[in-house]
Amino acid sequence: MTRPVVLGKSWRPALAVVVAVAAVFLVDRWVGSIDQGGPYRQAIREPVSRAQRAHGAEHIVLGCSTSEWFPSAIRGYRKLSSEKVVDAHMSDCHQSCTMAEATALRRLGLHYQTATFGVNMFEYCEKYRARRSMQEVALLPFDESLRLLPIYAASDDPLRLAGGWLLNHLSLVYGNTMWLQRHHRKAWFGNESLSSTWFRKSKPKKQARREAFECDYLEADRRFGLAATRAAVEAATELADQVYLVVLPEKPYSGDAPAAARAREKFFAEHADLTKDLDGVHVIDLLDSSLAQARHFRDNAHLNRQGIKAASKLFRQKLSTADSSAAQR
Image 1 (cartoon, rainbow, N blue to C red):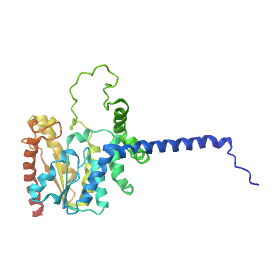
Image 2 (spheres, one colour):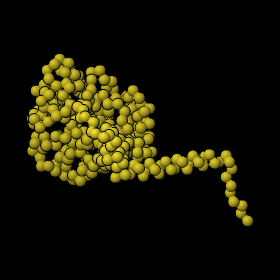
Image 3 (tube, rainbow, N blue to C red):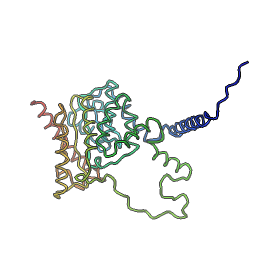
Image 4 (cartoon, one colour):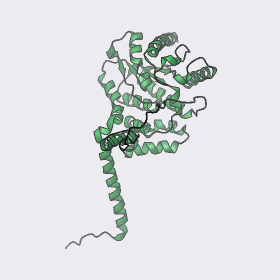
């Protein structure tokens, strides 16, 4: 007769830990899968899907929402039909996200004649965000993860970035906490904001909206941002024959004031130096004072309709110059 196996007391704490970890993991997977991860997580794969569906595309636009007007400008300059240019930009997709997306697209066997994306000064003041790490993990193939090493090493807190990368691999909730909080505030209290209106007798007074996209570029520690931009450009060179890195203006550094002009000059010079040893890479300078005017912006970073019209004209001129220069080499 076989005697039943009885766990000794020394095993009981370990078993309790295993059960607790398993329970947390299962709850994490359940919560993190609500509404397929919500709009932030769903948005990560959508540009990749668009690129996969664009079978006849020869040119691709990457980057964040400040690049949203590039596709129409490229079509106009190159006199192309809409299916020849695929818009794969993603809202809030900064340099490391762009690097991850370009790498993912290359691994899918895609290749283009040109890849274009823009960078803004405000991206160089960003601190750690779990959502940014979520983008990297969702897009970057695991065996390409060492591409993140030089980016993280340039940060003032590399261990936090590495920890975010690990947690986003282990958890579906960690990088998506902001949306999950808003989702459950609305589901439970009828209001997704932090204004506490769900228990107030009267609505609080409206306050002026705090302006986003602010950065003291000249005083910022730009090593992390520049390392991420370099990685994004390198990944784009593997995806396309020619890469156009567009340095974009923004409202806080608009106008003819000497401080604004110095910041724009520094912004362009650093990116020209960053990419000077890379073949097939063109830095497109849209920092001209004629475009960098406050009237051209709908917020600190995004151009309004008038600004897009002016930027598209300047963009086409700069593309023509870059292409002519490349042809003479």
